[in-house]
Length: 357
Image (cartoon, rainbow, N blue to C red):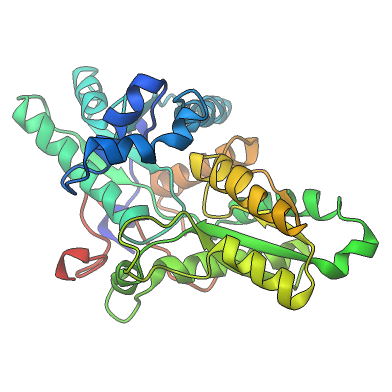
């Protein structure tokens, strides 16, 4: 248990902290420039990378989905008698986290619970949000504004309500598969791939590969609750240097393999790694995977994501109340849960130290 979890907390506000996304064609390249800053990627290449955004009029679904989550969380807070304002900030696009921090400081907010829109550990799923918090505090100091104490809410990949809502989503779709097709149907859990080297340093000493182990554990728990024993864990949306190894198997490659070698002709896809229908879901799965599967004669049925549901909002408030009342963590798995730290501190010494690579 970290210092942030040991004692009961009193918060002035909740900050929903996310990745961000463009909301118009003219915003796509500037957004991608923010995402890739420091990597030396030319603007012409970003225009190509932005193709999937242009397909949707330059609009990422992420901001709207996060606003929906915020609306549900605000309603759940009110229902439980919490007078807690909810703010929204992003790393890579409006509303920028630094601007939101300014607004909170000017509003007299001094102690903030931070809900990062990721269930997982690892650098991009957890540590990068710590860096966002550090930047917000530095920005407030540079602006001469009163500082804010930020407590990041823990990882929730095995929270009973997250698992239960995922299992419900899987069951809804699995029941649509006819009995005569069940034998040639495979359940695929998919999450965002990361470089193997990053996964290898994710977690405290003696507890590495935290991201991939957490995803595998969440898939096991959801499949168990859904009553499905035959499932595979796959990865998607890799990018960057093609020579660098990333977590595998890729979902398209794996679907091809099990179709040709095992006679699978239907895949039920659960995007367990994403809490909402991100671009990686509506493009990489609903477009690219769907097209590749159709070419093979494989049917793809995707489950819904769990973010825009009442039970997800209940879980977020549960996590806040864990901290407010100093309660024991509600978990259901066997893999380490961490992520609750103060003011952007890492979860443990050496955790997610990608700079040592």
